[in-house]
Amino acid sequence: MSINLGALGWDAGWADSFAPYGRSGCRFGRVGRVDRGVYTVLAADGTVRATAAGRLLADAARDLLILPVAGDWVALRDWPDRRTTVEAVLPRRTAVIRNGAGRDSLGQVLATNIDTAAVVEPLDPSPDEGRIERLLALAHQSGATPILVLTKADRVPDPAGLADLLGRAAPGVPVYPVCGSDPASLLPLHEHLAYGRTLGLFGASGVGKSTLVNTLVGTSVLATRALRADGKGRHTTTYRALVPVPDGGSVLDTPGIRSVGLDETADGLDRTFADVAGLAAECRFADCRHEAEPGCAVLAAVADGSLPPRRLASWRKLQAELRWQADRRGARLAAVDRAETRRVRALARRRVDGRGTLPGT
Ligand SMILES: Nc1nc2c(ncn2[C@@H]2O[C@H](COP(=O)(O)OP(=O)(O)OP(=O)(O)O)[C@@H](O)[C@H]2O)c(=O)[nH]1
Ligand SMILES: [Zn+2]
Image 1 (cartoon, rainbow, N blue to C red):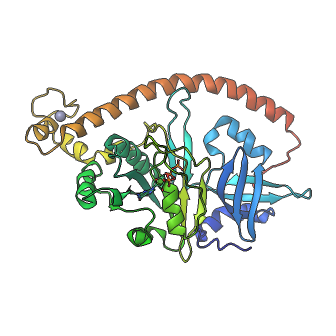
Image 2 (cartoon, rainbow, N blue to C red):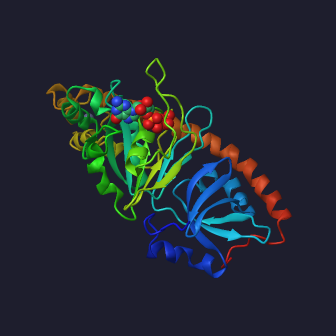
Image 3 (spheres, rainbow, N blue to C red):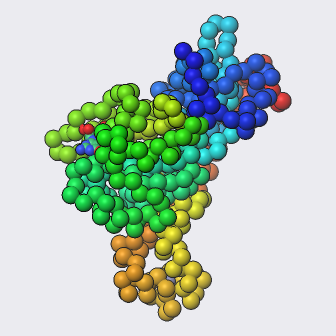
């Protein structure tokens, strides 16, 4: 079955970056899902299962973030023994990257090449503003356009009022209160699903992402399961899936996010807290910590009620987290570097036959 890759976003720009691989006999496709190192790739003549080429794996030893994820455009090579390998990942236009929380401080790429990053949070049970802020920071950092989708609007008496209130945690971000199972309520989302465009969904487990995908696509492509009796969502989605939407672009579902690390090198936090950042620019001292300094515009706004104290508190908390993460990452990278350098050198010595050599290298 042939697949319309234009609908999935293939354009002249991608064709340009693919050209050298095309000359060396590769074809192209977009990664739809990843299962333990097996990539399901949507290509012009149908889906194909592929594994990473040796060269790509060797490079990944240095930086795991370069391995293919759902949303990536890749160069594929078909071998005489009917295997297909992913030779290269075309340079990403956008990427949603979660920093490792907990033990591993290495990041994880959740999705790439999406045009719109939808943060999904339910209106019932009561939405978690802190979680919305964290996810929005990732969305802002990704390079895609962030939006906020509030599901389960059918379960609360005044969804529009609640959406307005939550919009305060999302300055400048369009907010869509929806009922995931009702196609009419999802019509406003279709502007993000035009031909060639990709809408990515990010949210905790059970917030209703799969239900959104099923309704947007019109058939049941992803398993949704009944909620547990305690009201918590079950962790049902174990893979990322890129799904074409009839007469439009595509939607990319991601697994339920349990914890969200932030990328300390990007400015997503500043954009998520545009209200706080804007005020901070007006503080008397450029290095104001907004704690007790005279002429602090942030504290003044809290005092006169124009900035909710909760906003300042979450901003402080995330700032502190970023500083801690940056320290820990510095120490960890130094250690990883030494080990990986040894490993990659050993690999390179064994791979002098040049199999998997890329065009132009
Ligand atoms: N009333 C109502 N229920 C919804 C809505 N959206 C989802 N649900 C229900 O919420 C539960 C979880 O929905 P899913 O779509 O499976 O959630 P998910 O975000 O995909 O969860 P994971 O697969 O764990 O990542 C299911 O029982 C859905 O039927 C909605 O808008 N209104
Ligand atoms: Zn200040």
